[in-house]
Image 1 (tube, rainbow, N blue to C red):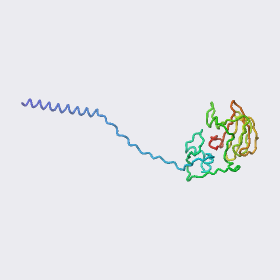
Image 2 (spheres, rainbow, N blue to C red):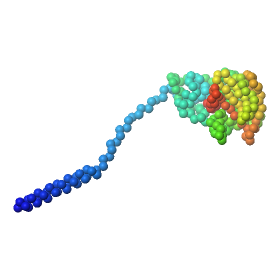
Image 3 (cartoon, one colour):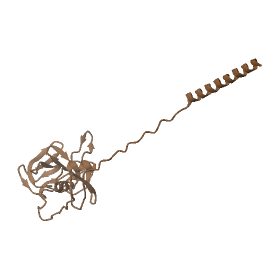
Image 4 (spheres, one colour):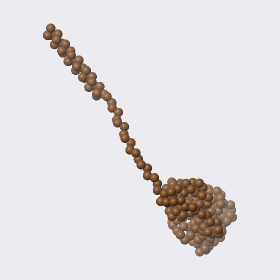
Length: 233
């Protein structure tokens, strides 16, 4: 009888040992999913300023002057692409502004002489920063007819009226406040160096220097070319 009890005891111990091994093996193969990361709430800082709704006849240049901010700041705050012009009804964030301002368009002669106007009216063939082969357009190209009159976009003094390589017959007008306008690809010039011109004065005749007649128009601020569409009504 003692021998049988000893055998039962040994079997019991072996059973406990086998169960323990199974438990340990189960523990070794158990996969635990990582705890989910606690997402941190990111606070989006609201831009400071007010929104201005663009009215008919308003330009980015005029809006910037009215609020006393730089054109470049409005462009950056609203992510305006280079090839874009502002549209009537568009909302523009004016950084740093405290209240909406009413911009009055005065239509009396030369009342808005500091505003730029279109030198000719026509379809835009090429936009600012468009690539042409290895070159980049630093203005806009406006489709014209042969002999069409090109007019000064704004009052100023003629600082160049001559042939320029790549630009052909060209007029440059200094507006006296850091801005210069450029009118190129003309067939004939109607002004000379040193002339004082007013907005709308005839300064050149457009002509076909290529298969398609067009006026190349630039607005430069200092030495840097800027998008004319930001200044034109």
